[in-house]
Length: 455
Ligand code: TYD
Ligand code: MG
Image 1 (cartoon, rainbow, N blue to C red):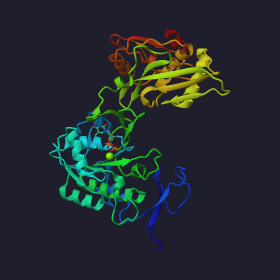
Image 2 (cartoon, protein in one colour; image 1 turned 120 degrees about the vertical axis):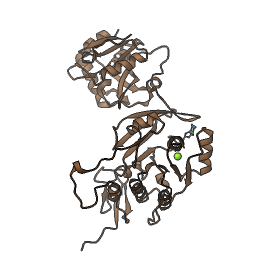
Image 3 (cartoon, helix red, strand yellow; image 1 turned 60 degrees about the vertical axis):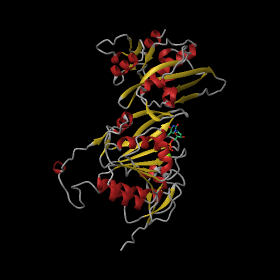
Image 4 (cartoon, helix red, strand yellow; image 1 turned 180 degrees about the vertical axis):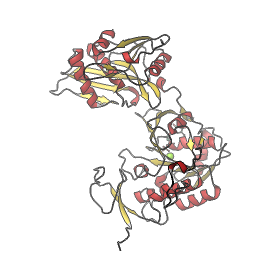
């Protein structure tokens, strides 16, 4: 009889597991990321199966015969958080809220839970701060404190037993890295502790229908045993990120079994805790009275809504044999391609110039609708002529110099009009059938037309 495996080696980065130790993970090619995990009584798969009625081991049913329960959603009180979650918290779901220390995870969850406690039973389990610290913070922020239950605990078994007895509807565990299971000897925060603790909590949540919000720290190197190994166990993974030490925080979902991913919520950290930013375009658009050359405003698409962001380019004579092409917030290869198109189809040669392109506010733009804005900014900087302040643009550029339409053109134009822009250079295919009030739309089919329309 084959010997039963008692331990496995798990990659801290990608979560792949192996029977033997090896220096390099063969899944993600990272070095020295494998650490030993003791296989306890609970296997990760068990957590996933529990709680799905009709899927008992060994029984097969027709998909059509599975009774569907209406998935009740509980609004969190934060519109931005609901948006990222796909419309509120789903019963029995497990949500991981990740982020670097100091991002504001505890603050966000404390504010959410204090608000929720009025409507449903809520329990806040803290393993990092004392209840007094949390109470002080809640009072200082002026949160309603009389309904929320709080417990300071780091033993996973005790947390599960207490939660079983009190049956809260929503439970926060802050954070997964400080929990420990009795039957595992390694230190809290190690892969085996994190995995086993999460498996126990998730199994409890699935069986009881409790909504579980887990906090997970990610270090800058991402090397700590953490959210990565959890990602396949949980239903939804949110990341709270701050860009450039600013007071703004963006919340993104990287995985969501109950909604769309890549939705973005924006918050501001104030002395009164986190506040939602209802008009994100406004914060990314703080331009001075005078616009410098190389700056242009574009409309990008974030999840399900348009966002106005400023793009800056700097074109400067290079003294290097290989002039620099630097992008921040944009794809580096795409810039090289666009500059080649500019040369061939726009007649502008920047081969002897350094080109730097930056999306202001730390926004990352992944869609090609930024193409036209990139080239207009480059041309503006090269000629050292500022673009008109009321100008907004978007559009994809093809290798033949053609300007291609992008999705949701009309919504993008409306958003721009709402923020007072009065002139838009857009792909001809994106011109709306109905005129948009106060907005002059300049349709362009080719790059050369766009350059002519500039000044
Ligand atoms: P915290 O929620 O403790 O972060 P995390 O749990 O992600 O580690 O909050 C961290 C930072 O937020 C802290 O450095 C101070 C700041 N902060 C404010 O600026 N205003 C506030 O009202 C609060 C509560 C925190
Ligand atoms: Mg915290």
